[in-house]
Image (cartoon, rainbow over all chains, first blue to last red; front, side, top):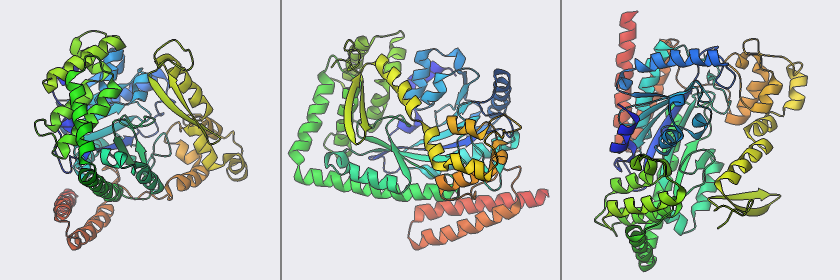
Length: 349
Length: 171
């Protein structure tokens, strides 16, 4: 398996299936783990980092679920490749910044990915389509168990898994759910909801995690606290919270349909009209318009498009994907043209 | 729209800054945005937040001896940790135990781990408490008529009981 093979497939989490997939795009669980006594990546010298990398690589490749995975050394990747992995949510921006002695392991269907020597020695994640935190947990729990027999993880009975940043200490777990909330944004209730979420010690972020702005009405909600509760308890708390957000979004969509149907139809059909006819389009504009089209599909106004295609479009219109598809570097202007062409082709414009 | 800083290139990054309750919007090109983000990181990062939380200036001197105490395993001092916001190795947790205990409690509202244990350290006792926890959850789920959830918990219990039996048999 090679990196370019991913171009031919849709990541598992983009399938648009799973519970509540009209509102929840994906569910993700990540665990941070470190080797006992070994210096954390930011502190280790080159030799130590290489040693840790080799040790972890060897263990990871023996894990049952990762037998057919792809292992990439970041130093072997060019900038477009790295950006490509970030766009597919398989790796963080921070990981790409300093590529020395770093690697990423990606499972065949892109469900599992493990960053080696990011902030912690291991950052493993499982992403599932739809609202399925516990499904994601079960997979990552199994991988973690297998790895814990092969590697000695830094752990204290009192404080749990010991991580480079004390905000991750304990379970080392972050559960997050990616939500599409156009109803709450259009009915101007979103700020109220986001404030409530942060008061309950959960965090909301944009499409690409930490430090990114929400775009296209997408919001990522995750737990802040990682110590003092069991993993299942933390996930249960997120699940309860998200269930309420889903109900609110459902209600907002119903209100819009009942009270502003014409206005809503107008925005949705204008969005699809632009996407099917544009010859130059930026990724920001595309994401905003795709969000409206997706809403149209979710509430039954648009009937001849499926979610999987739309989800896929959100990813393949990104800069690195366009350049991978084209097979060469493109300037911003060239990308805007290529993007418009690709969207017209996919949507049959 | 042109970049607010260089005024030459197309603005691609849109930034909202809040200083003293004054909100300003900045529209920047890729290059100026990168520079700006480096500046911002220098101005305010996670390290500052953590340092603020742990109120370290006083605490270290009063409770844990001089700030110059270094982790024997990696050489990091608490002062270094305050600056970078990251610990150097797992041994740092022992070296700075007192201060970290306070900090962890402030961040998480607790300083007692209740989650899983690595398999090689796991004792059957721990599994038993997890098992009881799960059984309670199952009852709750049934009461709330959340049957999908109940089925999931039931499977988890079965799996745990099977694992327990295997461990006992092996022992």
